[in-house]
Image (cartoon, rainbow, N blue to C red; front, side):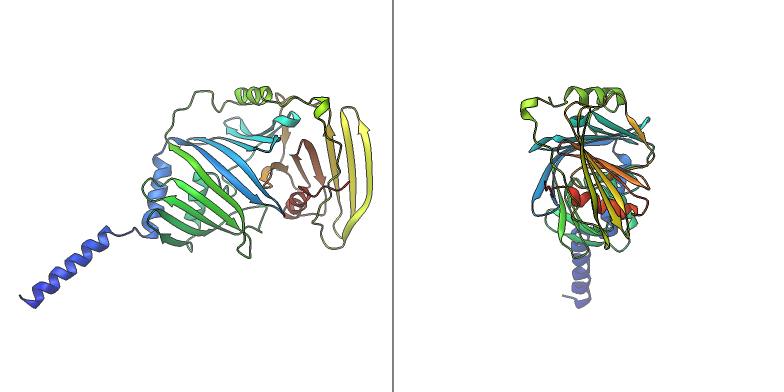
Length: 338
């Protein structure tokens, strides 16, 4: 047999085999981008594990997205119904609802486009599009990317791994790492449906405020736990607790912690026996919703407000940066001392 003919056949076989092989990183990103452009939306269920300290916390997340800018994210801690929150975006703005405290915030915000969101499909794709240096691996079942994150108020989580199903391009898992490549956040998608049906009022402000109010946990006096003061584990160097006051007010108890030093701040903690406001009257905030891991807070240049374990926390400072306020807030959670 002619050697040139044999060589020609071998070359053709190699070309065919290459064509049948895995796609390149650029091909996959292009397919993912096309998917986001063509889909009408999605519904998803996910479980998020957070390594915020000695204990791993787990949250169940229900995500609805309707193009172009309708979002509804319900976060719920199965061990603590008081931590349940709803993040809603529609044409009226961005809302964060906290049923356990009858509290709701309204933001004029670009959320979720202004920061990474590990449980939002479009956010994951946008992170990949922004990172030209991302690393790509194809396995038998997944496409996996190692990419940079884009957390505006938390530079301590710079890396992420994103896993997509090869056949459907559905997200399967996301891991977010600190600077030492320790996985602090893990999101596992248990269900994901492209192009679902939505009712006309699924993203309506009134409907979601009302449904959240109906699900408000009863604050039975027999179930009330003692008021506990929480102290931040993180404080800027040269800053320490200077004064602590605990007072009762109409409808609950309050602790005022004053920290003084290089970067002073005040932390107010409140526990209610009666709900102070109705969900039907959202409080307008000149700031951004910020993900603290265990809850969603309201962040401005000089304050950060959040809820946890049925309590309201308010951090105020003219000295702390936004990132430092987030670090202080994250360190308060789970560090109870009386």
